[in-house]
Each structure stands twice: as C-alpha cells, then as structure tokens.
Length: 464
Length: 114
Image (cartoon, rainbow over all chains, first blue to last red; front, top):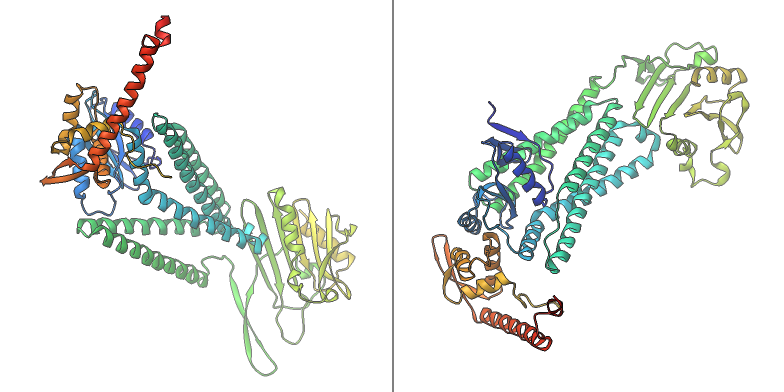
C-alpha cells in the first residue's frame, strides 16, 4: 500500500484559507502534509481523521536560513504551547495542525494577523513577483518590437511566437498574482478597520489559477505543435529545469553546510547566473554545430567552384530542393549549375515558403527567379502581412521621391487574383509583383517584366 | 497626520499589558489571561507573539530576562500610560452609557418597548 503521495499544488502564496481547507480535506481522506518543496507537496498516509490546520506567516523565516532563527524557534514554541504542531514550512509560510477541535486559534486578532501577513509578503513574495512581472513585460514588448520589425518572418517562426507567448503568459500570471494580493489586502484592511475579518482568499482564486495554467499549457503546446524545430523550445525548457534543479541543490547543500542566509543568497544567485550562462552557451554552440553538420536541414547539397578572370576561385553551395516554379517553366535556358533552394517556416498563424533559383557569376548570366508564398491562417493578420511586403522598399525613404521604388495597385486581370501590385520606379514598371489569392500572398521577382504566357504559368503553379 | 500606534487598545492588547504589570514569561500570558477573564478572552499564540514583538518595538514593554527560550517581560511607563489612557477611554464610554440609560430609564428604548 502506498504510504507517500506527491502532488503538484497550485496555490497562491497568500491563500491561507484555500490551503487550510485543502489540507483538512486531504486529512479526511487519510493524507497528512509532510513536506513542501518547489515542485511538489509530500503527503504521508494516516488514518482518515479530522485535523484542524492553520496557515500563518513568519517574516523572519527564509528558504536560505541554515536553521530556524531564535525568534522563529520561540514562535514555534508559543504555538506548541498553545497546542499547535508545526507540520511544514514554505519560505515565510508556516503550517500547523492539531487534533484538538476546541483549541484557541493561532491568530485571534484579525488586525494583527493582517499586519504580520503583509510584513511577511513584503519580504520576498511581493518584490519577487513585481520583479518577474517587470522583466516579463519588458521581454514581451521587446518580442513584439522584434515581430513588428520583420512581421511575416517572425509570425511564421514558431520559436519567436513561442517566446512572445511565454513572456506574455508570465506577465499575465504575475500581474494576476500581484493584483489578487493587493485586492485581498485592501479588502481585508477595510473589513478589519470596521471590526470584521480578513477577506477570504479561497476557491475563485484557485479556479482562476488553474484556468490560467491550462490556457498556458494549451497555448504553448499549440505554439510548439506547428514549429519546424520542436526540439529547440524543448531543449530550452529542459535547460531551465536542469539549471533550476542544480540551483536548488546548491541552495540546499549550502543550508546543510550551515552557511549563513546572506552568503547562501549571494552564492546561489551567482551560481544561477553562471549556470544559465554556461548552459545557454552550450545550447547555442550545439545549435550552431548541429547546423554545420546539417542536423537542422534535410537538404543535401554539393559545391560548385567558379574561377574569376584574375584566377581567383569561389566555392558555392548548390541545393536541389524541389521548387513549384522554376526558370525552366517560364523560358528555355541552357545553364547547368543552378541552385534550387527553398526554406519553409510555419506557425499556427502564418506559413512562409521562400524559393530561390540562383546562377553563379562565370561568363554568361543565366536568368534567376525568387519568390515567397505566404499563407495567412488567421484572416485578421492578412492586411498587416500584405503591408509588410508592400513596404519592403520603405528603407529607401531617405532618397528623393523620384528615385524610390514602390508597389502600385494594378489589379492586372491576367493574374486572376483578388489584388495585384507591381513594382514601379521613375523609369516605369519592374518585374516584381505582389499578388493576393484568397488567404495567400505571393511575392515574385522575375528580374524583368514577364510575358503574358509567363504570368499564366505562374498563376497555374503558384495559385492554390 | 498619522495616527499614533496603539492609540486605542483592543481587548487582547489591554489584557496583555495588564498582565505585564508584574514580570511574566511571554508564554504564560495566554494562560494568565484565560484565568483572569474566566475564559471570556483568549489570546492565540501567534497573536501573542506578534503583539509582544510590537509592544517591545514601540517601547511599551521590555524584556527583563531570557532563560533558555523563555523570555519574560515587564510593562514600561509608556505602556502604563497607554493602559491608563485606554482605561480612561473605557470609563468615558461607560459614563456616557450610564447617563443615557438613566435619562431614558432603561437599557434602551427598544428594550423599554418590549
């Protein structure tokens, strides 16, 4: 028969009512709380019985203390003298229980209870969450700025969306925790000033926390589902878990060695920074090394060496990716060393397929072709993706008006499209187009204005 | 202007200070109050510990000796003044109540009607 049980418990740190109710229910089912760790709560099997729990907070307590402080021991003795036994601790949180049903509660004066809870919360719960919230909001806005700078690329890159989502969810979680506590504190203060009790911080709180957790998991799975390199975020998550485990191990080892609280905090924080640096460097090195060995791509390639008139040589990578539209489909060519290269990125919002057919400089100049096919899965994003392509030459804003390149709406019926834009310069139209078919945006560069037949072939090959 | 700390005392604060007019171990105060008030007032161990810490920080009591983990306390002049002020406040309340009852000839108008 199982005598120990480990559970992941989703409680807010200040939710003493919710924790008390939960532990009393667990005791009725025959499980008594034994230990609280960062990852799980440990319960031990007992005869099912009615136990009364009290969750209180002691501001001097700390996860980094090698042992209980004198004041904490005195506090525990006061409680023991009052019939309450210490069961478990979690930073400043102290959990007591008793079998005596007519016992005097540990906290008998609400104003004093509220004051000391708030004092304990100010120690690390509030500053810790506030710092995490600020960092995550800053990271979220940096990610948004990054996305805006290269919209279609970033929207179709799962890792970028994944990171944005992670920081957004952390911001929401910490914001919810902080606002939840502040609302609870002021509600309790108002009630206590009028002679009432502290506000309850129970069931709704836990339900919202669980809902946020489920939304977080669903969104992260969704973001990872459509990523090309799913292993990248998984490696990232594994790295964080390994670093956190090592940091906790260091902290606990220092506690066992009876290192002072202050030294423990400094050494643990420095170790955390160093370990993060080492693991991130190893991860980056691994990704780059993997890239060199072709681990991130299934494209076999060969090389081709060209010789310049001065005798110098250049070596080029030649790809043979299958492309939906090739120069050969549009015209007759007599060139053997084309490189056909394609890249596909896809997220649950946008997919972007980029194709490039390149020749190499050696005597004759063979015609080239490059295009991008963007499928927008969320209709609301269509216009901003289109705008991203239409404004691709906006970086020329410093040039005089008549020297700038720009896309002009032509809606040429040859394309059988919802919208057609063509590139113009002061000298007239160029061979670059942006074409919209339903939720698809195609950007194509023929390098010269195409013929009617070439447009017809393109429509046949690139329109879904 | 910020309100003075412990300007008015709650029942539990009052009894703790009252007990400390003679030197007493912190832990014994709970039992002393229970007996003193015939179990009408009980102070929880957490509340007692926190109030003793607050009183000591405010200079209303001071630690007289430490024996192992047991600490004993005694009230200071400041604590005595707070106790006296609270006593006077309670007398004023009692006087006001008595005058009202005498004037209206009973416990309250509602009770008179009953």
